[in-house]
Image 1 (cartoon, rainbow, N blue to C red):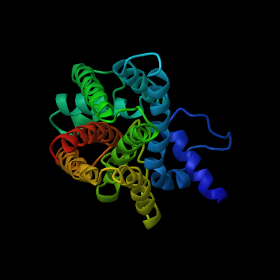
Image 2: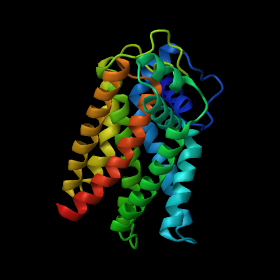
Image 3: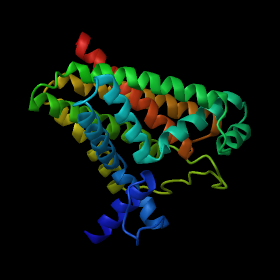
Image 4: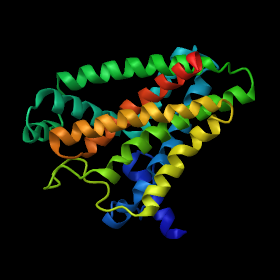
Length: 265
């Protein structure tokens, strides 16, 4: 149990800005196993984001509360995944060879593709999340619980989609010079089982209220498949930035899927 707690806190420290015990560091052995808790980190980030939304909604409009929830989410992770998304936009937008793409993604400066990509990403995320929240009329405890599940399932499932890429593809940088070092060099059944367990549980609970929501898994993993295929084509694998971009895109796809399922299924 003590070792598992150490692995969990390693994951928490790597993926968020939440304070952790002083004895936790980026030890390769623990970092290698931390992937099993990546979707669980989504539970935590989603919960914090939901609380920001819930408390803000007492005094502000739903749209403003959603904006505050998004801000808190970014602050909680230190824009870890958003930074990856911006780097991918810059790298794949401005590079035409593997070497050039990797060089651009390694550059900490944000370019036009990254800036435009982030603006469009947040606009879409704000609009979709606002509409998704409005589906559940938060006038009773059950509806509020469903909104809570919406938040944590979005963060958990999108992180599962992202981390699953390391189970099927190779890390692209042979010299490991990326800002985001390879999260795991090898994976056991514990990492795979843990990731899928924590990644799917919130959606399974949400689907108890409306079983059709389970269908949201399909478009999320279809998007994951095409992103991984795209990365493989251009850079022969993935980088940490690619995983961050996958998480952000799949989160948006999840909100979109929930809306479409609600309206048409």
